[in-house]
Length: 380
Image (cartoon, rainbow, N blue to C red):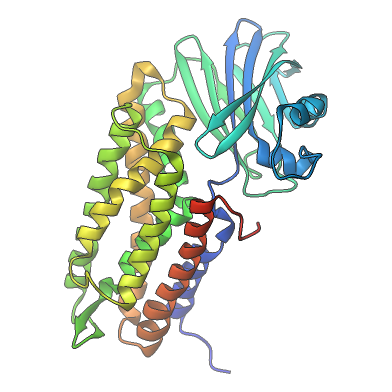
């Protein structure tokens, strides 16, 4: 059997990774852990999605598809035991005793959340604190815990995943450079797990190594036109989402979450179908800019959920945005050289450009249906 060309294998891998996680049609499973260190006491607030708790503990006892306050209240002790068994805080090598103090319900951009407040009493806190986080990792390896840690005017952030479930945080005042680097890392991470953003970008990039001639896609004659094409698309997308990311983060403009998420899914559908039935064959940067304005609101929801330090808002905002651009650039740098090498092949023109676009459009149509009608068509 003939072996695939190495460039072809790499391109297939990139497309497979982009399409690998259809379960991310909704906002990925996250919880939000806010800790404030006051002397030897750590006060915490843990926001956990009711849909995730329902999956783990079966909150909906009536089976009617909705969770009432009465059903939630009946499970509060079970929720406490389940959550606190998967969180530990220690300092100076000594464990802190955790105890829940209050339960509330709050609405996030993606639905209702259990809000559990608790305290951790430590023998001493010193200059470092160690946190072990393991919520839902055994049932959902895509779950993440987003941490906001505050001591006085010092604010740190972190992301817990199955691979980074144990982390140590400094309680000393971080430099502005360190804060910038922390938020930049968050920006890179969130573009890489934002599968709808990635597929929108991929749909725009697939024809970047081709030109429309007599209603057919033909390979570009040289690398420079492809590079210019990509640069115009990425620049337009960057400028657009940077504008709305800033406006939304500063509270100047706000849009309903379902409208934003549904429009993002629609943008992926349109961008993919445009490769099959071109309307913007040579001016895809216009589409990148217009829909990039909506994608910026999606990025802003992530940044607001992380929590922004009021004293260094500009550093956090710029760092996160540049992190998003760095993650985006990494995707482009991995894709473009391989696509250029394969641009003349029948495989690329027929199966990658047209076939890949069709797959992206189908997947995004499912996302759009789910988001508009608040359904769950793809399990994961």
